[in-house]
Length: 117
Image (cartoon, rainbow, N blue to C red; front, side, top):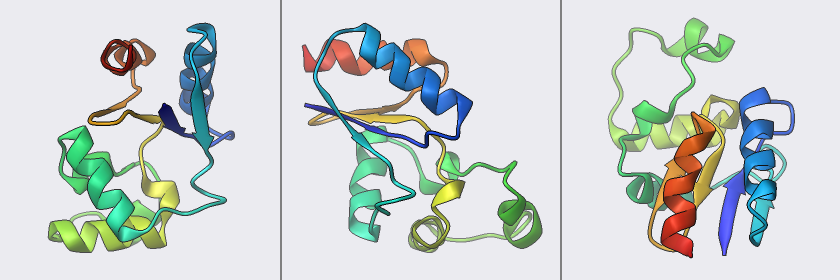
């Protein structure tokens, strides 16, 4: 079953959720701001996404601009930063059994639906 890591306050995340609903498939909604992800979960998710943690950081967030911009961190440090500041995580992320995609634009979600089907 697919999972969507979702923030209801985010326009892009809501668009991703609506896209999935329109596909009439089963999926689980994970509101990661209410139920934060741990370091190990994030690490596995980034492997499925095939990206470095820093590539999934929202650079337009105020916390990033004030505290992180221009600084260098290793992958483990980025994971810890995201765990402590989950709003920094780009969304929506749709996770399947072996792969995950960032749903921006929403059409990218189709990649994971085809793998799940």
